[in-house]
Amino acid sequence: MRRNLSYLFFSIFLLTGSITLSAQETIEQLSLTEYLGYVKAFHPFVKQANIALDESEALLMRARGAFDPKFGLDLSEKTFKNATYYDRMNATFEVPTYYGVTVKGGYSEAEGNFLNPENEVTGEGLYSLGAELNLAKGLLANERMTVLKQAKLFTQQAEEENTLRVNEILFEAIEAYLDWYRSYQEYEVFGQFVDNARFRFDGVKARYNTGDLAAIDTTEARIAYNTRVLSLEKAQLKLREKGLKAANFLWINDVPVQLNAEVRPFVDESSYGIRFTAQELSIENHPKLKALGYKVDSQRLERRLQRSNLLPEVTLGYQWLSETDVTQNVRLGLDPENSTAKLKVGVPLFMRKERAELEIASLQLQEVSLEQERVFIELSNKIEALQTAVNSFDRQLALAEIMVEDFTTLFEGERQKFAAGESSLFLVNTRESNLIEGLLKAIELNIAEKVALSELYFNTTFNN
Image (cartoon, rainbow, N blue to C red; front, side):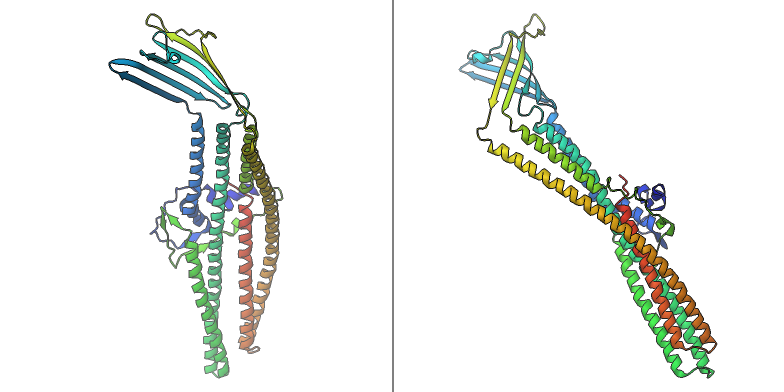
């Protein structure tokens, strides 16, 4: 059944920005598929949902920036009383890597009468190449690694939340459209019975003029006619009101679209002739659950980082040195005798900040995990309730249609008896009122079933 959904049920997901209807173009009928096409392509809320996705991608780019190579240049010079104290140039190049290692290279030149012995350079210059490594804290989990992983998860989370928000907007639009469609069907019903009441009123007057009916019958016929006219006026007002609410979701090229009062809704009944199997009602791919799953993974990364921060800070740095002069090229040999090395160790005595950060990360992970479990139960119950409602509305609608057929039979029979002089106008009006009530009830159940089917669809079918 699912294979028919994309074609029969909301083919909106196949529509893109190729819709070219202008805001001023006049149309007589607007189908549900066309309506949803405009909503998905142009509604500002849909665009806002996409903005959040673009923002997550920008955050991902920012996180990747922590691994960008860095070039530095330090020039310093001091001259006093015609004496050059020092003239130094130091160029550095660093490449941060995924795990706690930073590759470093550099080139130095220095001359002067009062150089610090540490800065003296033999030959024309001094090259260096080496790395800095975190041996404990930051080795398997460091901030730049965690931020990048979290940014990737946040992008995936934003994609799911974008799908969820778009689905919510489309469902709100469907509710407004179906409300408009119901008002239109009710208006059609009252319009039909206004014509019937007018025809009957004219007939009663004609029979009164021939002496076949009493004057009180014309009064009752006129009351019935005016009652139908009043109901039609109310239905027309409601139709316009619901049409304007449905138009709130219609935008084209950032311009709101006003629906003309003559535009009529149209729903292809075959689009709603779909039922779901138990397998199709699975919620594992629900964007809300998937977004929470990414959030849980992100909190796990945060907890792992805080656990790593409990380790002592042990940083080992080592660089090979190679000199140059005017007579030869750079000596590329890595001689351990020509090197610099450093070891840095740091341990907070009480580690209160680190332990607190770990506790906070653990509590936040627990909170998100509980939310994930809660949402799973809520969605499971919601889908089961929607499926139950769809099945119930289906049965109720079948009964309502049978009742409409019976009311129609009674009404037609009573009208024939009245034409033969064997019944009263009161009974005809009563049968007609029962028929109208039955028709309105059938319309209400039909729309309620469509709304439930729509909500069920948007909670089980997702198109990224």
